[in-house]
Image 1 (cartoon, rainbow, N blue to C red):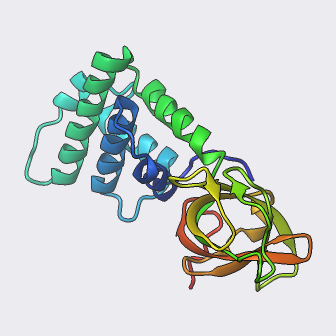
Image 2: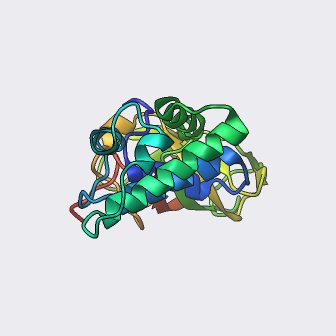
Length: 223
């Protein structure tokens, strides 16, 4: 499974998790708002949205072309989306020296795909105490125990990037970004609230609960 951002929900999750203030985030937020306002119901595929917007306003997509479309009482959603796209192009020109819409989209997707390399879901992790059979030493952020879900006997490596912590001691609870080694195996099976164990070999050193799925290819939408 590759690490390309293809859908609204994956991009929205990554932007929402980004707690820093910077222009790339502002541009991506405007894009998400424009996508959410678009006339096509439940549009979730980024490439399809870009194609539809170009078909409506013209390609290559520019502020000038967007401004030639006037509100006629029937095109409120398209008009609103166009205004947001014009705003993001203007912001990109001022702060990133980039006016080409395709390049703007590529730039913020490339930026967030770097983060996507590190995360499939956010989980709350409870480490067992040493007396309960857990680790004898603390774990550092970037630790890679095995992850085991109840619905399968398969285990996979799950890198834990701790949120707001670098070290977790036995007995502590922490929220972490989890990247699993074999996401293709779990595609369409995970749900928010799902529990899992994390292990060293056969030893269960803690339990986790999925709080937030970022990689929507993993999510079981039918549940």
